[in-house]
Length: 631
Ligand code: SF4
Ligand code: MSK
Image 1 (tube, rainbow, N blue to C red):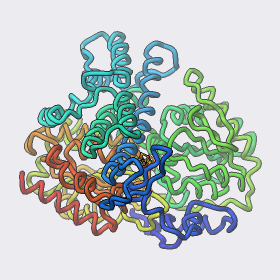
Image 2 (image 1 turned 180 degrees about the vertical axis):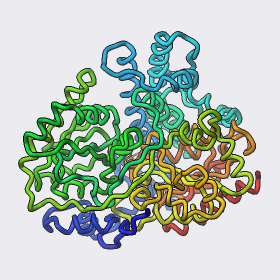
Image 3 (image 1 turned 90 degrees about the horizontal axis):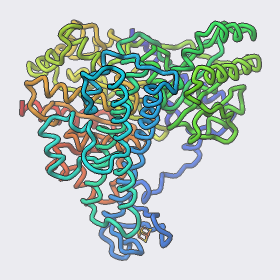
Image 4 (image 1 turned 45 degrees about the vertical axis):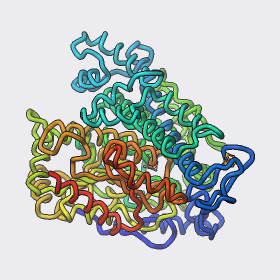
């Protein structure tokens, strides 16, 4: 059932559930939380920074530049278009580096696992040969040789200096040819990120179009490189997600008063997987009992949460904007963080409770946190050490501060692209054919991806309202990241939510018992959408390129640079992408016009910006209808 308690408050900025509002209000007024900072600042963000026209790449600046005003060019003469394109490109490079460094970590671990140096092994043998082929490795090799060649091929995706990242060859042929025609096929992840950072330093690339084409190339190194690699190798090591029932918090309701509660937060599923294993260990459970708890209760925040939800059904405690309130329940013994999207303020909030903040990565340390480095060679041992630290905090829990709302909702997650094919086509005829047929016959109007973050400067349930509008118009919704968490909290990831769909979509969903919003994973797993789109093209009937599918993407509350990299690789892949509530190039009409309109002449995809759920829905449904007219 859709839980009507998943209501959205309109009180504090970025506090989107009633329960979160209540938990925040229980914190003393002098505890500064992110929503309170937004409130107390009382000023709008800097217009130059927001529009992309603040340049600080050299010490003659920072220069605040105004488009069309000669006196207000940079000291070096840089135009607004150059500055805005440079800033945008740097966001793409940073986002690409984040996803890809995550991918590199997985590739390195895969290499070590294959060579017997770490206690991980390939769990998904069925997928192994498909992945090997995608990486250019002969799938008929004996397994031992195949694994070693695959490990080498994965590391080459980062270090390769010339040629083409092999995973781009998975794209439909006409798309790959387009990329070749415009010189944007990425050579290697490291090369593209370093080159883009170089060309946007003072005195290098001053042609905004050239900079943006560089950004396009770099973004492909993310989507069709580092991110895709991370997803595929994680699937091999940890298992390919399959539909799984789980619970998602509507107000931290997944925390358990009689357990040692541990939340995993960040993006790396390898540590979380080890923690999950350790939490079932009889020795650890016994230690928890000795301090008066019944066991260990693991939950997830942000994309680490999505990763363990997808594969293990471990419940989600919250999205990005709920990391502070998770601690404010007073019932969390530890927040275990790895990399990305961890707010520095969690340490400050934790000081008011008994919660340990435990950092685990050498590249993501926090003052005031306990550091327990995650050494993959001793994965289970480290995981137990972390859980013991949490167990030791349990007796310090102050019951007068505990406030666990009894609110959670049932969902179904775990829709890898393979799982979607099985559901639609059946185990022995796994295929997108039924989906394509239902798009062609009009029961399904089209496909929309709602991805990306949530954030404290938006106080409207845009993702949820938008999803409902799209579903009602027979649009199947795919979701990843914190957007997926928000839609899960609103009950849209349960099969029962099919009743919110228009007649055509509802008929299709009810026949297979599917929710109208399919949770496809974490941020890096947007690459699953690229693979699914490619398979849809190869299945036939909807054209021979991705842009011909009546599909569209959006990130209604984007926050991280990673979202910009994701948006750019979708645009370069031929998809229209709508971002909101603002866009980082609006300080230059020249650059914005290029990204919103002219870029379509190259790659058939483009950007748009929208602010309300209604605006998003109108733009997206228009685009889908445009795609349908060409069917
Ligand atoms: Fe100013 Fe040019 Fe230096 Fe940028 S590169 S800070 S626009 S002088
Ligand atoms: S965690 S990047 S807030 S989706 Fe991937 Fe959520 Fe955005 Fe972080």
